[in-house]
Image 1: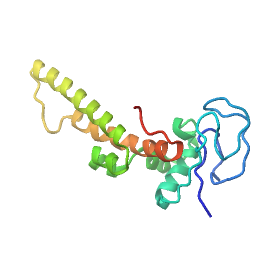
Image 2: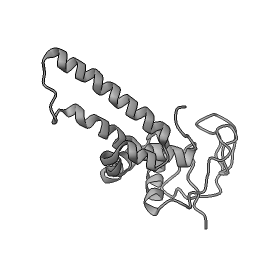
Image 3: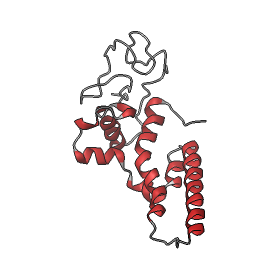
Image 4: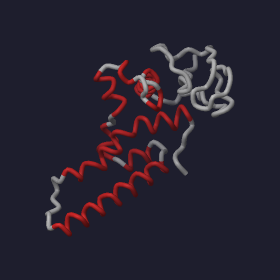
Length: 168
């Protein structure tokens, strides 16, 4: 039995593994009735087989679907622990750019790394100009790892389920 990723176009109940379901209109692009095989307006291969993923990732993807897909519009339906599981990735916090590269999300890895270094450089310039000491324990030192940790699961969901490879 193949596992088919739930479509982010429709909001399904907790049983996100339903294969044959009609939706009236795609919420992403507004096309008419489409089957689970994919939305012809957005992406014909929206329901890619996720057989190569571990059970943990399938569980995370199902929780993201229950939360409303990539917009998290129904996040209140999840428990606090489930919210934490889909909104924070410990390995991405520790390894940041390298975690994204290992998962094949190189576009986002480059973009986030450049953004983090740019913001850190600007803040460092302002701290030096104001005479404040930039220390190892400055809270800004943890902003980069938090960016990677808080976006990793959703970025991986977008890549594997929606086929969204990045911004460029």
